[in-house]
Each structure stands twice: as structure tokens, then as C-alpha cells.
Image (cartoon, rainbow, N blue to C red; front, side, top):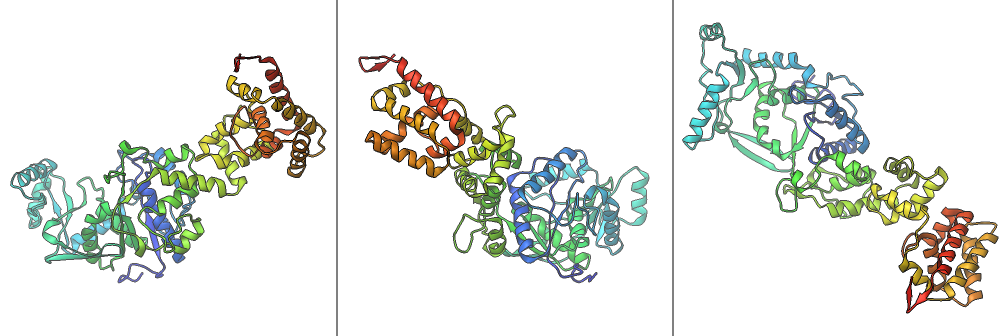
Length: 496
């Protein structure tokens, strides 16, 4: 490895590092997506690393949900859990010894030291600093302890953490692809913990060591981690490694410009999957939360996103989450994705008893997908067509209002019965013949049949409905409607 660069091949390598302590939320998904789009465009390597050092809160079921969610979105990784790779293990809980060895390097060079301050002492000093109106930070009192003093503290039963020694420099200049240059005053950083007293690593140490050993070239993450960057940069320099290129993404905000949270609605990816949003719509929409395409065309396939995405077009300002825009994109994807794909995605939303026969299912989806926003709406939309209608008083009154409606239905029923083919052209010809024979056209011809077949004033294309139901079902529904129509009597213009 070239210790000046920390990257053996010079190839672009990025990582997404979720913690399995909670559901995968939209902000994390957007971070994963931007990493994935960037590295796919560059022909690099996408690493999935699991930050599970918080053993008490980490959960295996949550981890599986995170992995399943990323795979469902199509954000597959080249190295990490389920696929392995040359830089494993890819779970931080399995790398503790590595972190301890790297912390020891800094102790040996005088860039880190043992700290014997107890959590209670640190908390008390924090309160004192706040009472003085000062920002709390470690005061460095253990930095000059001699070996003999350290041994005496250990003999007293004190357990030591390891702290990084902030070098004597006025400021740390961080360069960020999105945010430009920012100078941080070293005095505000404080000597921070590398190893806790139980030997577990801090986020800062584990993050930097893993990025070095996994040869990460670009660190693309949320802006909430931006304040950690000067500490990380100092660690890279202490280890003699070149700092990777940083890019800190804007927050996702609610419409009131506060941080998106549960009080604004669902924030977990699983909730949107369960609500019937398709992966292509979520990927398309999340890509637009902070990034703008060069041609302003927001309806984009994944391939187009890969071709056009760039970190340079990611803004600094928070991105507003707009559910109406997501709904629009989801409806568009349902209408334009291959019918076979939408059919497969829709199946889990149908109960076994309500699932149409296979030959009907795809036709039903084709008829109804233009009228819905999510997959979850498809069962009801399909049942509107597939279920035999109940004829309300209003529908029967509408049919009875024009005497020719009953005649039109009888002629159409006989015409359908006589058809050898139920394809589009045959049905169009039947309508033309019926209209000519009865002297009607347009709505007076088609609308009575729609009411008879569905019991609704509106719905999918009529010819598609006929083709889906088939000859026998169409004849049965028209016959039932005519029976109801004949059974009503008109009194004072009302149907009883």
C-alpha cells in the first residue's frame, strides 16, 4: 500500500456505513444512493460496512432489514455482508483488535495518551464549563502523566481510555466537494477519545481506520457528520495518510424546514415499501433531494441517473421532502415500467383469496395501473372491475331515465354473444354496428354498457374491461343489470 495515499489501486472506492440500531430511514438511503450513483459512474467499488460497535443497541433483525432494503432498491454492493471481499471483516464489532493496534501506534508516537478520568468526573467538569458559559471540552489533565503515575492509577482500579492529542496548530482546514473550504479552530476540538476504557473504539477511530484499510477514496455522508471531519482529518495526518475527498450532503427537511422526523410522517424506507411505492420511484425521487439534473428533466431511469449524477451539482441547502412529488413519480413509474414487472411487484398487495387468476391478473393490472398512485391501491382498483357490481338506485335511475338504454344493452348482449373474437377490432366493429342500428353514438352507446358491467360511472377503458371479463361474464352482468332494470317502476320520476 502507498502510505501517502492509503489507496493501492487509485480506483474510486466509496462506502456506506449504517448502524443496525434502527430502521433504515430516508436520509440514510439518500446517502447510500449518492455513494452508489457516484461510484457506478466512475466504475469504482461500493463498500457496505456495518458500524455495530454499539452492541447494546445493535440488532441482527434490523441489520437484515437494512440489507434487504438496499437490495430491494437495487443498491447492490461490491464488498460487504453477504458478498465478502478482500478487506473484511466488514462489521466493526469484529475489528476491535485492529482498532486497538492502531491506537497503540499513536500512543507510541506520542500522538495519543491514556486518560484515567472517570465518566463522573468528566460530567462534573462539563457542567462547570457550561455554568461558566464555556463550550465543554476535555482539559488535557492526563496528557502529562508519567508512567509511574499511570501505574499508580491502575493500582487504584482506575481504567484508562485512550485520547488523541490535538496537535499544536491554529486551525484545521477542511476541503469539501460540496461545501468548499472551512477552517476549524483546534481549540474547540479538545483531545477526543479513541478507545473507551473497556477497549471499544470511538466512532472517530473506527471510522478513520476502516476508511484507511479499505482504501476509501471519497467519503460521502450527511452534513450532521461535518463537525467530526476536522478530527478525522487530524487522524489521517497522524497516521501518515492522505485525507480522502469529503462530500457532506444537505439534510432532508420537512415542509416547515425542520429536520424530517416521525411527526411529519413516515421516515423509514420499509414504510414506503409497505405503502406500495416502487424502488424506481424512490430512487428517482431521493436522487432529486439535494441534487439537480443538468437538463432539468426530473423523470429519470436509474441508468440516466448514473450517467448524469455529479457531486458538484449537489447543493448546500436542506432539501424539502414533498410527498406529493413522490406520489407523482410513483404513479408515473407504475404507468411506464414494464407490465410484467408491475404485476410481480403488485402480487404481495393482494390477499390470496382476492388474487385474480393468472391470465386475468396481468390484464387487470394493465387496465387499472393508470388510475392509481401506489401498488397498495391496485387491489381495490382491480376489484372494481373484477367483482360483480351491485346496482345502486342511482345507477338504475340513470339507466331507466332513457328508454333506449335497455334496448342498447339487449342489442350489445346479443352482439357479444355472437362474437367469435373478443379482441379490440371485433369489439370496435360491434359498437359501430350497434350504433348504426340504433341511431346512437358516443356516450349514449357506451355508457349504459359501462354501468351494466361495472356499476360505476367512471373506470378503465371499456374495451379493455370487456376483454378482461370475457364473453360469458359480460353476458351474465348485462343480463343481471337488465333484470334489475325491468324490476324497477317509475313513480314521480324516482326509482323504487
